[in-house]
Image 1 (cartoon, rainbow, N blue to C red):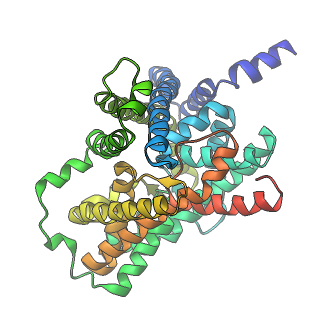
Image 2 (cartoon, rainbow, N blue to C red):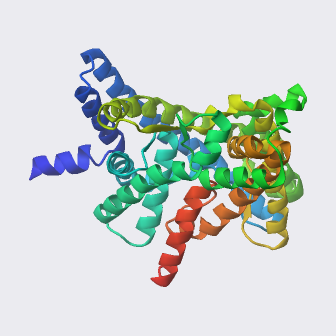
Image 3 (cartoon, one colour):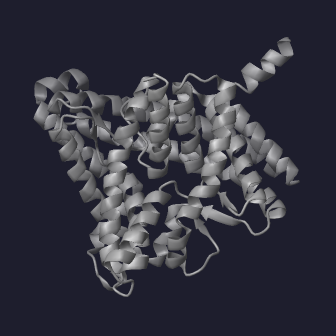
Length: 423
């Protein structure tokens, strides 16, 4: 009994060790050399631990911003960033998240093997985010860990196989082939962007015939875009709140320097989170990919959104600008309505808005790019607000999921929770 308890709680209960064990098994199945098995396992565990370290730094800065924003405007400001909310959830449900992620991947393989939806979702970061969302939703309903893992794995598997199919028609218009799919959980927005583009414009009027200032390319840099977007909002909140409100939060730091340091700390924390995620996912995903190639012929890889950027570089920048403009408009409307305010952070708006712009451009030229990205900006502003109440019900605050596909799942859970009287 003591040995069983040690294995279940002390080893499998540590999410980093569990993920490392799964990577070890996957590498052994593929008969990798001993040195690669050892290196892959260690990198997986260390990457997961780095993820947690970054979450602590980002959360500290996020809490400071939350307090300042409420003081300045009398509103609740939320930054919808999946990395941040996932990091928070990981501190509450680490084992549930880890097992949903693994179980979801296995269900994805089974569904792809047995059905016509032969899409294998290979964007590890979004698989992790979806696992966190499902863990939050299912635990908020009061389910046990075992029930949450089993149900979450099934939902995860179906989402991984079905969502890429929704945007595949527009994906073919983007790439000119049917060889790859989009593996980014904003497929509802991307499909809608492509459809809207086909209704308002002509793909012959491509954005690639438009020249934009070269300085706009700086928004493609993660550190710069997050720092600028968060920093501007931070300083606006600090100035409006006034010196007297900022100094108690700043401690011994000058009240005008403190927002800068908090901004850079937040950015650094997110960078550490992403570094950790990339490190451990970079090891564990390849451990499973080789298996799919052997046992599921004909399956299409669903890849991360930057895979479409080379097809329309100008659309990526124009899409970001359009989506971010929509986010700012939504922010002011939410503020005027005295509701929870979703702060449009540049990095998710860049990747999601840029991708929506590419999809809209593929079927409707620059008009489709602008309209599709703008509507997407509205969706990723309103959607996080709709599910925010569920997140706070389990003790999470200050952030939310911007992805439209996640928000649809969250809305369904919201109806279920209200019907059951859970919130």
